[in-house]
Amino acid sequence: MKMLPAVTATLFALSALLAVPGHADETCNSPYMANLIKGQEDYIHVWTLGIKGMGDGSDKLVTIDVNPASAKYGKVIASLSVGGRGDAHHVGFTEDRKYLWAGRLQDSKIFVFDVGSDPAHPRLVKTMNDVVAKTGFVGPHTFYALPGRMLVGFLSNAKDKGGATGMAVYNNKGELVATYPNPVDKIGEVQGDGYGYDLAINPARNAMLTSSFTGFGNYRTELGALIKDPAAMQKFGNTMVMWDFKAMKPQQIFSTPGAPLEVRWSQAEGDNWAITATALGSKLWLVKPDANGKWQARDVGPIGDPAKVPLPVDMSITADGKGLWVNTFMDGKTRLFDLSNPEAPKQVYEKVTGKHVNMVSQSWDGKRLYITTSLLEHWDLDNDDHFLKLYHWDGRELSQQWKLDFYKAKLGRPHHMKFSAKPAANVLAQH
Image 1 (cartoon, rainbow, N blue to C red):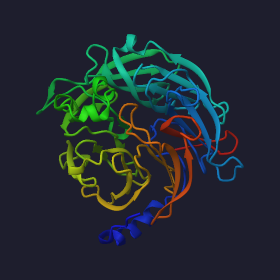
Image 2 (image 1 turned 135 degrees about the horizontal axis):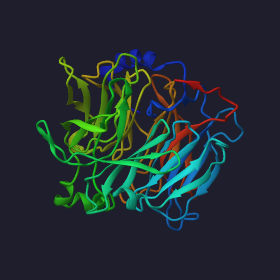
Image 3 (image 1 turned 90 degrees about the vertical axis):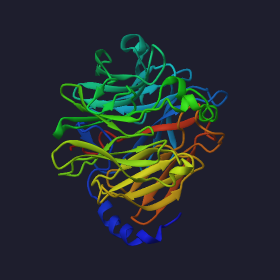
Image 4 (image 1 turned 180 degrees about the vertical axis):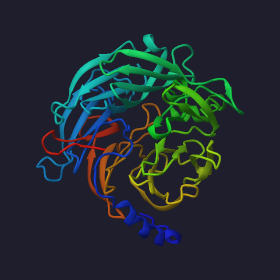
């Protein structure tokens, strides 16, 4: 652990702000999800990459009991293999929280799990094999719940496997409703590059913000080889797009060099801004209206030493919008930024939480952080330390509660995770 002395006082002040009572759900879920967990989460579902020769070698949904009152606390209680390996990546709930959609970046299959009937033992209820044929897009990445619908953001396309891509809307039965290409024309002063990664919606402003990454040819190349290829390194997204959500039309394109990844809107009442981090630029970018109400995007500070390319990956904003946890893959650090003034974020804490770390999921009350390790099948560096860890945050220090070694358990490499609860254990409340 390393406490930064210049901002110790800020950290103590921030700790009081982070102790927000109420829901224990994740802060990055779609605002259209009707039910958030009230109280302690009971389970975590982890979408896991299969490794050849390890266990059954298949991608799988792994369920862990995370309720400290349970006799199986911190233990795997279910492992559901889907067959084969396809670069398992992200997952997302339907708006009723009954089903979990999971995507693979290599073969572009989407798997739908019933996690509502018995969260401790999910069931695979649908496999979508025709995603590429029907949409023209490759690499389903982000699954974002809408009323009766699922909005899916993609990373690539079927024509040239490059970064130009788009989004697709499905109904909750898994039937395609519509597709929307990302802009490649100039809007205002900025040329669209068509790239895609994450998406997030601010319903109050009818605003959807999308970010950008890279295409199939790059994310399926070994990281070491990719870094040594100057031409390939030019094929990363450098823009974000603000959409009229109801019309599903791009309104503005922002220049945000260096592959902006996760999009996080502040959920605090009265706030009207979003933040992202550029993977290659190692910068935080704020998207906020100016004095005239026009959206603007600007670099508001570094993450670590950008010259060393720490590679910021996943991040989690606190429920009150005052703090931001950021994981950096290359140095294995988890950092906390004070966002009390989002125009000038301040790093107030950091801790090495693994050799390499990727995903971070935070409980709504800010007291628990779960961390996993895998980034992409061909970008994971030589590393036998793949895990799910639980940390408690007391406002001053991250304290590890337990570690689940996925290699020792012969499960594979853990990537994205979602919380769930026993149907009768928690009263689900409207948020």
